[in-house]
Image (cartoon, each protein chain N blue to C red):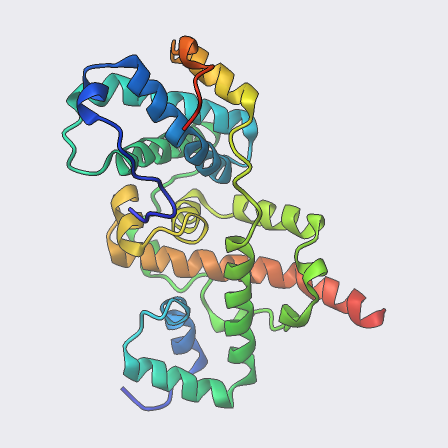
Length: 206
Length: 86
């Protein structure tokens, strides 16, 4: 796992597996911040993110005695948190399947060059691009991504994991991750282009 | 493969291209296409900017204290709440 994204530490796995409460508290303090922010990106809702955070550590503490160390502790915790986040999204929108039919994976839907918005908004000044309103729009746009695409985008582009790590965490092939990442990025580029094209018009009229 | 990419072909490789994960030959073809196609230049630049804006969002303000408190209570670890985190 990428050092910058998840801290690896000197926690004693042996003590954790024996249920040493002091060591468990250290583990919680080391990873709770990361896991909360990950859950917040998935759910965009502080209450949901807190539920994911609590469930993640409850499950981890129950499962730790069986932890075999095939992955690092941080990867293992992350995987639990990702699964909890996806489960919560599934509960909230039971009609939305998180696994699209196989044929959808290869379709060009959303990746056709015909409907692209071609406003060149890169030249907007930083204070337009980084305004609070823009931030809110960026967060809303992620929430419009189907959960299948959101997971890939959050882990790869927001958390900075590699394609391989993202594939492992989501139980997907690397090819699947790349296909979903392409669709997620193009979807968000399109949404941001709609939004910033308007800002560009206002700005040019000033 | 022909030496000339069309816009649709470029679009299907665009994500790998901005990640620098394409083979050199395909990269060269894309760069060639970009010198001739204004629309694809805009798409690539705005795609890069989109990823960049998401990657540089402010974050890491730490876990709010009240959330840490409720977490430690839920996990029955409350006696460790006052130790130094970290």
